[in-house]
Every structure is written in C-alpha cells, then in structure tokens.
Length: 430
Image 1 (tube, helix red, strand yellow):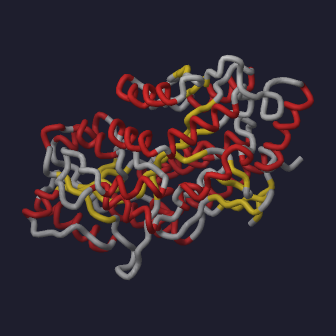
Image 2 (cartoon, one colour):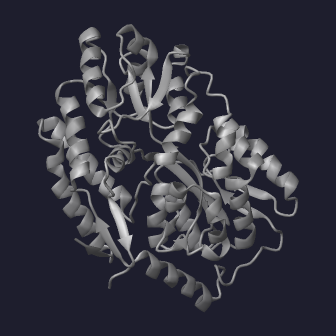
Image 3 (cartoon, one colour):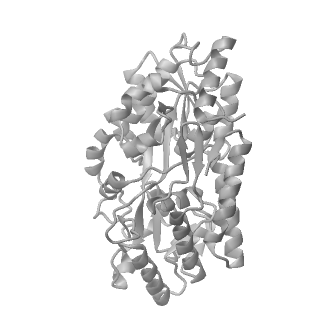
C-alpha cells in the first residue's frame, strides 16, 4: 500500500474520531488551560520568555519539559504522543517535520495555523507547509554566510572571497603561509550542511507532488558541490573532522581553521571554542558559484507544532503563534538565545540589533543574515532524512578513506534513499 504525507495525516485524524481519544477532533482546551510544552531551548536563560507569556496569558500557564535536543528527541516525542501523554505543543527541528507527519505525530494544523502565513518569510513558511497543508509555525532559521578570520585574511592581503573559485585560491594562499592551517573543516556526517550547500548550488534533494515524492541526490548541482569539497580534501586544504568536536575546538583555538560556512547560531560555537579570539572573526556573504549569481540557502532552523494528540490545541496554537511572531517574544528570543526569527516584521528590528560582541562589528551579522535570507532558497527535507544523511555520511567517509571522487557515491545514495521510501510505503517517481 502506497502512502503519502497527506494520507498519513488524514488517517491519524480519523483514528482520533473513531476511538473517542483526545486528538484534533476530540480535544479542545483542557479544564485547567495549562499548555504542556516540550522545548529543548527552554532553560534558566529563557525564563524571561516564559515569564512574559505567563504575565500576559494568566489563564494558560506553561508546563515545560526539556527532554534535551539529542538525536532521540523526536523518538521520545512520537512515543509520548502515541501513548496519549505527550505535550500540547512542541518544538521541532525543520528537518524532522516530514517524518513527524509521516508517523502521525503531527496532523494537518491548517485550521489553527494557516491564517498566519503572511506574517512569515516565504522560505521559512515553505518548511512547514506540505501539499498545501500547514503543520507548524517556523520559529527560527539559518541563512547561510561566511565566518572568516579577518586578522589572517588582512595579514595575507586577502579580501573575503565572493566566489567558490576565490575561496579555493584563498585556501591555497593560507596553506602556503600557514602550513598547519586549513581554510575550513569538513564534517562528512553533517548532512544539513551538505544539503544547504547543494541547495545553494541549485539542488532540491526531496520534493513532493501530491502523493508522490521525487528524490534528487544524484543531480548535477550536488555532484558539483561534492567534487569541489572533495578537491579541497585531496589538496589538504580542509580539515576532515566533526564540527564542534573536541578536535575542531582545538583546531579553532590553535588558529588552524580560518573560515566557517554557517549561520547565526554558529557564532556561539566559535566563541565557545576559543573565547580569547574576540574581535578577529568577521562575517561576509557566502561565496557564489558564479560572480553574477546571488544564491543562498539555509542551515538549521526550528519550528513549533501541535502534536496530533494535543489536549489543548486552541491554547497550543495561541502559544506557538505568540512565541514565533509576537514582537516582544521574538525580541527576547533574539536577545537571549540569538535566534534569527522568521517573521517579516521582526527583520527591521534584527537589522538594528547590535552584532554579537565577539565578532568584528562591521558588517553587522544580523544585516548579513537578513540579506542572505532575502535571496535564500528553502532547503528541502523528506520523510527519511536520517536514513539519507546516514547513507551520505557512510559514502563520504569511505571516499575520504579511499581517496575516490566524492560524487561517485551519489548513485548509491540516490538508489538507497528511493528504496527506503518505497519500503516505507511511499510512492516515488523518477
């Protein structure tokens, strides 16, 4: 039996009606008005956000659980929702939304959320809408740009590269001057990063047309990206290591990693690796494949959604709209946890926000991020992201070990990802 996101979501709604259990058609606001929230970002640091909600919504207090943002978060959420003891509202990474729809953890929430569409940037909204149905509200996203060591670039007479060819040339100049340094690191296991770079180059790894999925790992833009980074690896110009690993932190602290292609959230990780390097890291637009192009994409991002067995859908909808769109709430999220928020109304505020003190102040990180977002192509995700990223990671690890072409793995990644979807009951077209 073939299945699709739409079919699965409809089936979940039907189960709720037939069984009389709590769900989209049988729930309604709980007697207490309490909203049970699962959110990995909530901590002592974000207490002002919770306080603001509770002050302005005294009849709907939050009951917060932070299960952590580990790989098992989505599994815990799905299990709790299925057991009927899950939350009323929950945070989720954008990449996990299709799989949560497919396993029934999220049902079509268009009735509660679709009317807010015009408040959010088009690229952010594209990550929460499938087949014309709305499943979540985007809370933050990660437009792609370049962090670079301005002190090292200046000393070598280099300007931030505007094209990937210039980036490779700069890598060789840096290696010649500093044999122990690398232009960047490469993490073969970071599928989101490779997805972002491939999307910037014009790829679209997953797409859905009605009930049918299309998978495009073996396209020309992805091959171009993989061969480019494979070439840098072959020349010894990038350090192969896990991003944010102990080895990566040590390399940053030792001035051995000179750039990072990332987004706003990466600033904190660079600072954590070596807080003493304040004032030497700057930001610039991400390099282009052609000097005449202006293409960008995203790495990272999150949303808030209403689980299918929420007992307080009305309260959950009001909360997740508030935390993703209210001017005071979005300002606090930017101030306290550095979120690049997703509403168009918040962008003017972001552009006026001082850059993180750790970075070179001009240009402003928030202005660079906003400009990237204005040309950003939404990244695509499918129902089997972890499986596909695992295939990609395994293939690249072998290619690095063998010294073979990176793009040579794409055929097997494509075939395995398609087969995995078909085995899961999804219809896939060529």
